[in-house]
Image (tube, rainbow, N blue to C red; front, side, top):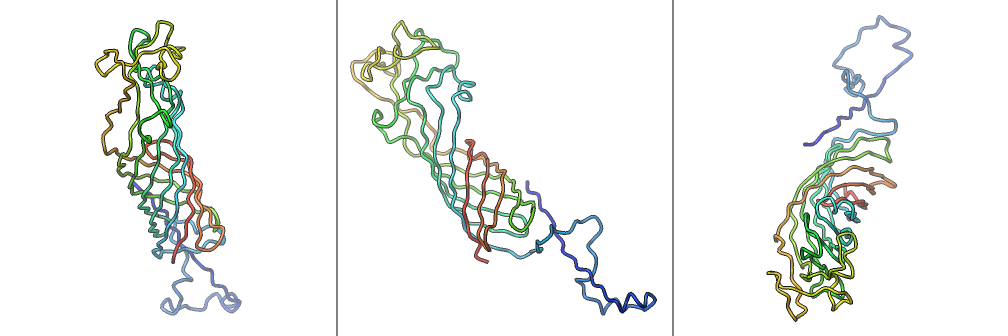
Length: 273
């Protein structure tokens, strides 16, 4: 749902001639419509801001840094090796009417999860077998990423001609590419949920754990497995921040938000008309 802010400009017309003759009759049809007072209950725009009801188009570049802290992940699993983070970049096509903005965007992120032991919710090591997630040079694949397409509606509360407060929401889809690789491991007896390493670290990586297959059978090969991840994910957007106009037609957005994952970001753009 979007909220629209109506901004109505009005002008005052004064003349010493009318002040000298308060009984002089006035023909309403002869008066400029711009001289009429604003409608009751509707505030005028901030000082220095000109009301604009035209439709404008522009583009911007998105830059976003996303991070899910380890503590948040540990609310859903018994142990996470580290948080998840990524850096995203993309482009928006913008349509703005008044203070309401529609942005159609394409964005890509390469998602990085922490390398190490991940213990499922409710499991206890060494009795239960965890996963040892590998990334970078230790992984067979180049990691997990996604490309998103979304529609975002953003409203602006104008503070002055240089700064506006902005908030909005949107939705879209994300197309998954790549994979997260991991070893299935059987931990050594020294491992615990609080200190799973080196007891749950595979021997090939300098630890004490033996590698198993998906059925829990110990195997002699150092086989990595991929998590089964749906090819398409929903994207949920929420935005709050500020928009700056340092020069005419240029915009800079600084914002906090949700792009399925929480982020802090900036947009740099240009309005063509």
